[in-house]
Amino acid sequence: MQQTPPPWLTRALIKAALVTMAAILLWQALGALFSLIMVVVTAIFVALALEPPVDWLVRKGWKRGVATGVAMLAVFAAIGAAVAAFGNMLVSQVVELVQQIPAVYEQVAKWLASRFDAQVPTQNEALQQLVESWGTKLAANAWAVGTQVFSGLISGLGLILLVYYISAQGPKFRATICSPLPPEHQRIVLRVWATAQQKTAGYISSRVILALINSTLTCIALTILGVNYALPLSLFSGIVSQFVPTVGTYLGGAAPVLFALTEAPVKGLAVLIFIVAYQQVENFLVAPKLTSKTMEINPAVAFVSVIALGAMLGPLGAFLSLPLVATVQAIVSTYLHRYDLVEDELLVQDEPEHKAAPAAEGAPEPDGAPADEASA
Image (cartoon, rainbow, N blue to C red; front, side, top):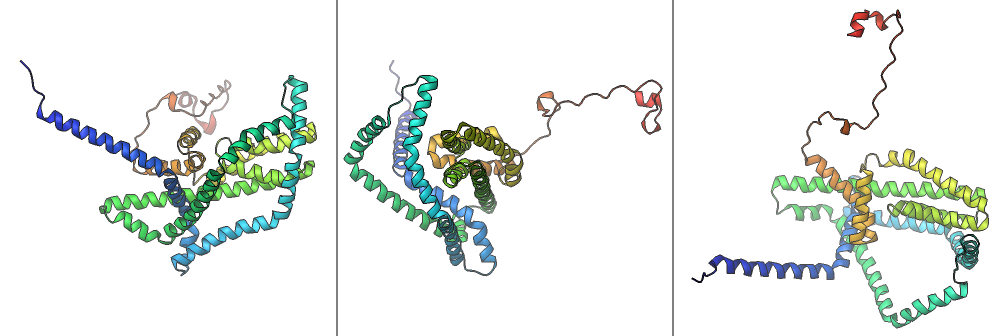
Protein backbone atom coordinates (compact mmCIF):
# COMPACT_ATOMS: atom_id res chain seq x y z
CA MET A 1 0.00 0.00 0.00
CA GLN A 2 1.51 3.29 -1.10
CA GLN A 3 1.74 5.92 1.65
CA THR A 4 1.22 9.58 0.81
CA PRO A 5 3.44 12.16 2.55
CA PRO A 6 1.77 14.16 5.31
CA PRO A 7 0.40 17.56 4.27
CA TRP A 8 2.74 19.48 6.56
CA LEU A 9 5.86 18.06 4.85
CA THR A 10 5.30 20.07 1.66
CA ARG A 11 4.80 23.30 3.59
CA ALA A 12 7.89 22.57 5.69
CA LEU A 13 10.04 21.96 2.61
CA ILE A 14 8.79 25.18 0.98
CA LYS A 15 9.50 27.18 4.14
CA ALA A 16 12.97 25.61 4.46
CA ALA A 17 13.77 26.47 0.85
CA LEU A 18 12.56 30.06 1.32
CA VAL A 19 14.57 30.49 4.53
CA THR A 20 17.68 29.07 2.83
CA MET A 21 17.29 31.40 -0.15
CA ALA A 22 16.77 34.39 2.17
CA ALA A 23 19.86 33.47 4.19
CA ILE A 24 21.96 33.18 1.01
CA LEU A 25 20.72 36.54 -0.28
CA LEU A 26 21.36 38.16 3.11
CA TRP A 27 24.88 36.74 3.22
CA GLN A 28 25.62 38.03 -0.28
CA ALA A 29 24.23 41.44 0.64
CA LEU A 30 26.39 41.59 3.75
CA GLY A 31 29.42 40.66 1.65
CA ALA A 32 28.66 43.40 -0.86
CA LEU A 33 28.11 45.93 1.93
CA PHE A 34 31.05 44.79 4.06
CA SER A 35 33.09 47.95 3.52
CA LEU A 36 30.09 50.14 4.34
CA ILE A 37 29.37 48.14 7.49
CA MET A 38 32.98 48.53 8.64
CA VAL A 39 32.80 52.29 8.05
CA VAL A 40 29.63 52.49 10.16
CA VAL A 41 31.14 50.36 12.95
CA THR A 42 34.29 52.47 12.96
CA ALA A 43 32.25 55.67 13.03
CA ILE A 44 30.27 54.42 16.03
CA PHE A 45 33.44 53.59 17.98
CA VAL A 46 35.05 56.93 17.12
CA ALA A 47 31.86 58.74 18.14
CA LEU A 48 31.88 56.82 21.43
CA ALA A 49 35.46 57.95 22.02
CA LEU A 50 34.43 61.58 21.41
CA GLU A 51 31.47 61.42 23.78
CA PRO A 52 33.30 62.54 26.98
CA PRO A 53 34.63 65.88 25.62
CA VAL A 54 31.39 66.52 23.74
CA ASP A 55 29.29 65.90 26.86
CA TRP A 56 31.62 68.14 28.88
CA LEU A 57 31.13 71.01 26.43
CA VAL A 58 27.36 70.43 26.37
CA ARG A 59 27.27 70.69 30.17
CA LYS A 60 29.08 74.01 29.83
CA GLY A 61 26.21 75.34 27.74
CA TRP A 62 27.41 74.58 24.19
CA LYS A 63 25.07 73.27 21.54
CA ARG A 64 25.77 69.63 20.79
CA GLY A 65 26.50 70.15 17.09
CA VAL A 66 29.00 72.92 17.82
CA ALA A 67 30.57 70.87 20.63
CA THR A 68 31.02 67.91 18.30
CA GLY A 69 32.61 70.07 15.62
CA VAL A 70 34.97 71.65 18.15
CA ALA A 71 35.98 68.25 19.54
CA MET A 72 36.71 66.89 16.06
CA LEU A 73 38.63 70.03 15.10
CA ALA A 74 40.63 69.72 18.32
CA VAL A 75 41.66 66.19 17.33
CA PHE A 76 42.69 67.32 13.85
CA ALA A 77 44.51 70.33 15.33
CA ALA A 78 46.43 68.11 17.74
CA ILE A 79 47.51 65.84 14.89
CA GLY A 80 48.45 68.86 12.77
CA ALA A 81 50.41 70.42 15.63
CA ALA A 82 52.35 67.21 16.16
CA VAL A 83 53.13 66.99 12.45
CA ALA A 84 54.15 70.66 12.33
CA ALA A 85 56.34 70.36 15.40
CA PHE A 86 58.25 67.35 14.15
CA GLY A 87 57.42 67.58 10.46
CA ASN A 88 60.68 68.87 8.99
CA MET A 89 62.85 66.73 11.23
CA LEU A 90 60.68 63.67 10.70
CA VAL A 91 60.54 64.04 6.92
CA SER A 92 64.30 64.57 6.63
CA GLN A 93 65.05 61.59 8.82
CA VAL A 94 62.54 59.41 7.00
CA VAL A 95 64.14 60.36 3.66
CA GLU A 96 67.59 59.53 5.00
CA LEU A 97 66.22 56.32 6.46
CA VAL A 98 64.76 55.25 3.13
CA GLN A 99 68.05 56.07 1.42
CA GLN A 100 69.88 53.84 3.88
CA ILE A 101 67.64 50.81 3.25
CA PRO A 102 69.88 49.41 0.43
CA ALA A 103 72.95 49.63 2.68
CA VAL A 104 71.06 47.95 5.51
CA TYR A 105 69.88 45.22 3.14
CA GLU A 106 73.45 44.60 1.97
CA GLN A 107 74.76 44.39 5.55
CA VAL A 108 72.02 41.95 6.54
CA ALA A 109 72.69 39.84 3.44
CA LYS A 110 76.42 39.68 4.24
CA TRP A 111 75.70 38.78 7.85
CA LEU A 112 73.34 35.96 6.84
CA ALA A 113 75.87 34.66 4.32
CA SER A 114 78.74 34.68 6.80
CA ARG A 115 76.86 33.21 9.75
CA PHE A 116 74.35 30.83 8.16
CA ASP A 117 75.72 30.46 4.61
CA ALA A 118 72.38 31.72 3.33
CA GLN A 119 72.23 33.01 -0.23
CA VAL A 120 70.22 36.23 -0.38
CA PRO A 121 69.50 37.98 -3.71
CA THR A 122 71.57 41.07 -4.35
CA GLN A 123 70.05 44.53 -4.29
CA ASN A 124 69.72 44.70 -8.07
CA GLU A 125 68.18 41.23 -8.26
CA ALA A 126 65.72 41.99 -5.45
CA LEU A 127 64.78 45.34 -7.03
CA GLN A 128 64.37 43.73 -10.44
CA GLN A 129 62.13 41.02 -8.99
CA LEU A 130 60.09 43.65 -7.18
CA VAL A 131 59.67 45.71 -10.33
CA GLU A 132 58.78 42.67 -12.42
CA SER A 133 56.25 41.30 -9.93
CA TRP A 134 54.62 44.52 -8.78
CA GLY A 135 55.37 46.98 -11.58
CA THR A 136 53.56 44.92 -14.20
CA LYS A 137 50.56 44.40 -11.94
CA LEU A 138 50.48 48.08 -11.05
CA ALA A 139 50.58 49.13 -14.69
CA ALA A 140 47.92 46.61 -15.65
CA ASN A 141 45.68 47.57 -12.75
CA ALA A 142 46.28 51.32 -12.80
CA TRP A 143 42.57 51.98 -13.22
CA ALA A 144 41.74 49.65 -10.32
CA VAL A 145 44.35 51.33 -8.12
CA GLY A 146 42.98 54.76 -8.95
CA THR A 147 39.45 53.55 -8.23
CA GLN A 148 40.56 52.16 -4.85
CA VAL A 149 42.26 55.44 -3.97
CA PHE A 150 39.14 57.40 -4.88
CA SER A 151 37.00 54.91 -2.93
CA GLY A 152 39.30 55.32 0.07
CA LEU A 153 38.90 59.10 -0.05
CA ILE A 154 35.13 58.78 -0.26
CA SER A 155 35.13 56.29 2.63
CA GLY A 156 37.27 58.65 4.72
CA LEU A 157 34.97 61.57 4.04
CA GLY A 158 31.94 59.40 4.80
CA LEU A 159 33.56 58.26 8.05
CA ILE A 160 34.10 61.86 9.17
CA LEU A 161 30.51 62.79 8.35
CA LEU A 162 29.12 59.72 10.10
CA VAL A 163 31.19 60.42 13.21
CA TYR A 164 29.87 63.98 13.28
CA TYR A 165 26.22 63.03 12.84
CA ILE A 166 26.31 60.11 15.30
CA SER A 167 27.92 62.29 17.96
CA ALA A 168 25.97 65.47 17.23
CA GLN A 169 22.66 63.62 17.11
CA GLY A 170 23.55 61.28 19.96
CA PRO A 171 20.38 61.71 22.08
CA LYS A 172 18.11 61.55 19.02
CA PHE A 173 20.02 58.52 17.70
CA ARG A 174 19.56 56.70 21.01
CA ALA A 175 15.91 57.78 21.20
CA THR A 176 15.30 56.31 17.73
CA ILE A 177 16.78 52.99 18.85
CA CYS A 178 14.90 52.91 22.16
CA SER A 179 11.47 54.10 20.98
CA PRO A 180 10.26 50.69 19.67
CA LEU A 181 11.39 48.91 22.88
CA PRO A 182 9.63 48.53 26.22
CA PRO A 183 11.02 50.52 29.16
CA GLU A 184 13.01 47.64 30.70
CA HIS A 185 14.71 46.95 27.37
CA GLN A 186 15.38 50.67 26.87
CA ARG A 187 17.29 50.74 30.17
CA ILE A 188 19.39 47.78 29.02
CA VAL A 189 20.21 49.47 25.70
CA LEU A 190 21.19 52.71 27.43
CA ARG A 191 23.36 50.86 29.94
CA VAL A 192 25.08 49.00 27.11
CA TRP A 193 25.66 52.31 25.32
CA ALA A 194 27.12 53.93 28.45
CA THR A 195 29.39 50.96 29.11
CA ALA A 196 30.60 50.88 25.50
CA GLN A 197 31.28 54.61 25.66
CA GLN A 198 33.29 54.26 28.88
CA LYS A 199 35.33 51.30 27.65
CA THR A 200 36.04 52.79 24.22
CA ALA A 201 37.03 56.22 25.53
CA GLY A 202 39.21 54.64 28.20
CA TYR A 203 40.86 52.35 25.67
CA ILE A 204 41.68 55.12 23.20
CA SER A 205 42.95 57.52 25.88
CA SER A 206 45.11 54.86 27.55
CA ARG A 207 46.59 53.81 24.19
CA VAL A 208 47.43 57.41 23.28
CA ILE A 209 49.11 58.05 26.65
CA LEU A 210 51.10 54.81 26.45
CA ALA A 211 52.17 55.61 22.87
CA LEU A 212 53.41 59.06 23.95
CA ILE A 213 55.33 57.60 26.89
CA ASN A 214 56.80 54.83 24.75
CA SER A 215 57.84 57.18 21.92
CA THR A 216 59.35 59.76 24.27
CA LEU A 217 61.42 57.32 26.32
CA THR A 218 62.50 55.38 23.24
CA CYS A 219 63.60 58.61 21.51
CA ILE A 220 65.61 59.62 24.57
CA ALA A 221 67.26 56.19 24.79
CA LEU A 222 68.10 56.06 21.08
CA THR A 223 69.52 59.59 21.22
CA ILE A 224 71.71 58.75 24.23
CA LEU A 225 72.95 55.57 22.52
CA GLY A 226 73.71 57.55 19.35
CA VAL A 227 71.38 55.60 17.07
CA ASN A 228 70.53 57.44 13.86
CA TYR A 229 66.91 58.26 12.92
CA ALA A 230 65.87 58.26 16.57
CA LEU A 231 62.67 60.27 16.00
CA PRO A 232 60.99 58.19 13.25
CA LEU A 233 62.09 54.93 14.87
CA SER A 234 60.72 55.95 18.27
CA LEU A 235 57.42 57.16 16.77
CA PHE A 236 57.10 53.90 14.85
CA SER A 237 57.85 51.90 18.00
CA GLY A 238 55.36 53.82 20.16
CA ILE A 239 52.47 53.84 17.69
CA VAL A 240 52.83 50.25 16.48
CA SER A 241 53.37 48.78 19.94
CA GLN A 242 50.19 50.38 21.28
CA PHE A 243 47.77 50.34 18.35
CA VAL A 244 48.64 46.96 16.80
CA PRO A 245 47.30 44.34 19.22
CA THR A 246 49.28 41.27 20.33
CA VAL A 247 52.19 41.46 17.85
CA GLY A 248 52.63 45.25 17.92
CA THR A 249 55.12 45.09 20.79
CA TYR A 250 57.47 42.88 18.79
CA LEU A 251 57.01 44.74 15.51
CA GLY A 252 57.51 48.12 17.16
CA GLY A 253 60.68 47.06 18.95
CA ALA A 254 62.18 45.16 16.01
CA ALA A 255 62.84 48.24 13.84
CA PRO A 256 65.04 50.17 16.35
CA VAL A 257 66.97 46.99 17.19
CA LEU A 258 67.56 46.17 13.52
CA PHE A 259 68.83 49.62 12.59
CA ALA A 260 70.99 49.78 15.72
CA LEU A 261 72.51 46.41 14.83
CA THR A 262 73.50 47.70 11.40
CA GLU A 263 75.46 50.51 13.07
CA ALA A 264 77.13 48.43 15.78
CA PRO A 265 76.27 45.12 17.50
CA VAL A 266 76.78 46.79 20.89
CA LYS A 267 74.17 49.44 20.03
CA GLY A 268 71.74 46.78 18.92
CA LEU A 269 72.21 44.84 22.14
CA ALA A 270 71.78 48.01 24.21
CA VAL A 271 68.57 48.94 22.36
CA LEU A 272 67.24 45.41 22.81
CA ILE A 273 67.95 45.54 26.55
CA PHE A 274 66.20 48.91 26.82
CA ILE A 275 63.11 47.76 24.91
CA VAL A 276 62.79 44.56 26.95
CA ALA A 277 63.27 46.48 30.22
CA TYR A 278 60.78 49.17 29.22
CA GLN A 279 58.18 46.59 28.22
CA GLN A 280 58.45 44.98 31.65
CA VAL A 281 58.00 48.36 33.35
CA GLU A 282 55.07 49.22 31.08
CA ASN A 283 53.36 45.85 31.45
CA PHE A 284 53.67 45.64 35.23
CA LEU A 285 53.67 49.26 36.41
CA VAL A 286 52.40 51.79 33.86
CA ALA A 287 49.74 49.95 31.83
CA PRO A 288 47.87 48.37 34.78
CA LYS A 289 47.37 51.78 36.40
CA LEU A 290 46.02 53.28 33.17
CA THR A 291 43.77 50.39 32.18
CA SER A 292 42.71 48.99 35.57
CA LYS A 293 39.31 50.72 35.44
CA THR A 294 38.66 50.59 31.71
CA MET A 295 40.06 47.38 30.23
CA GLU A 296 39.80 44.63 32.83
CA ILE A 297 40.17 41.68 30.45
CA ASN A 298 41.71 38.29 31.05
CA PRO A 299 44.93 38.08 28.97
CA ALA A 300 43.90 34.76 27.41
CA VAL A 301 40.48 36.16 26.45
CA ALA A 302 42.11 39.28 25.00
CA PHE A 303 44.55 37.21 22.94
CA VAL A 304 41.85 34.93 21.53
CA SER A 305 39.54 37.87 20.77
CA VAL A 306 42.26 39.72 18.88
CA ILE A 307 43.05 36.67 16.76
CA ALA A 308 39.39 35.81 16.13
CA LEU A 309 38.18 39.30 15.19
CA GLY A 310 41.38 39.96 13.26
CA ALA A 311 40.74 36.85 11.17
CA MET A 312 37.09 37.82 10.64
CA LEU A 313 37.36 41.57 10.07
CA GLY A 314 41.03 42.22 9.36
CA PRO A 315 43.24 44.81 11.11
CA LEU A 316 40.26 46.94 12.08
CA GLY A 317 38.66 44.00 13.85
CA ALA A 318 41.88 43.31 15.75
CA PHE A 319 42.07 46.96 16.82
CA LEU A 320 38.44 47.13 17.96
CA SER A 321 38.46 43.70 19.59
CA LEU A 322 39.64 44.84 23.02
CA PRO A 323 37.05 47.59 23.66
CA LEU A 324 34.35 45.36 22.18
CA VAL A 325 35.26 42.42 24.42
CA ALA A 326 35.58 44.73 27.44
CA THR A 327 32.08 46.05 26.77
CA VAL A 328 30.59 42.57 26.38
CA GLN A 329 32.37 41.40 29.51
CA ALA A 330 31.09 44.37 31.52
CA ILE A 331 27.50 43.80 30.34
CA VAL A 332 27.67 40.07 31.05
CA SER A 333 29.11 40.67 34.50
CA THR A 334 26.28 43.13 35.21
CA TYR A 335 23.39 40.86 34.24
CA LEU A 336 24.93 37.43 34.90
CA HIS A 337 23.99 35.90 38.25
CA ARG A 338 27.02 34.61 40.14
CA TYR A 339 27.14 32.02 42.92
CA ASP A 340 29.52 31.46 45.80
CA LEU A 341 32.48 29.29 44.84
CA VAL A 342 33.06 25.92 46.43
CA GLU A 343 36.27 25.30 48.31
CA ASP A 344 38.66 23.45 46.04
CA GLU A 345 42.40 23.50 45.38
CA LEU A 346 41.76 24.11 41.68
CA LEU A 347 40.25 27.52 42.52
CA VAL A 348 43.21 28.70 44.65
CA GLN A 349 45.52 31.08 42.79
CA ASP A 350 48.21 31.76 45.43
CA GLU A 351 50.64 29.27 46.88
CA PRO A 352 49.60 27.73 50.22
CA GLU A 353 51.07 29.45 53.21
CA HIS A 354 53.98 27.75 54.92
CA LYS A 355 53.17 26.34 58.32
CA ALA A 356 54.81 28.16 61.20
CA ALA A 357 57.69 26.36 62.91
CA PRO A 358 56.72 24.78 66.26
CA ALA A 359 57.59 26.89 69.24
CA ALA A 360 60.56 25.84 71.34
CA GLU A 361 59.79 23.79 74.42
CA GLY A 362 59.21 25.98 77.41
CA ALA A 363 58.83 29.17 75.36
CA PRO A 364 55.99 31.46 76.41
CA GLU A 365 52.94 31.45 74.20
CA PRO A 366 51.99 34.75 72.42
CA ASP A 367 49.68 37.05 74.31
CA GLY A 368 50.13 34.89 77.35
CA ALA A 369 47.83 32.14 76.04
CA PRO A 370 48.06 28.85 77.93
CA ALA A 371 49.87 25.99 76.24
CA ASP A 372 46.82 23.75 76.16
CA GLU A 373 44.68 26.46 74.44
CA ALA A 374 47.39 27.17 71.88
CA SER A 375 47.72 23.52 71.02
CA ALA A 376 43.95 23.21 70.79
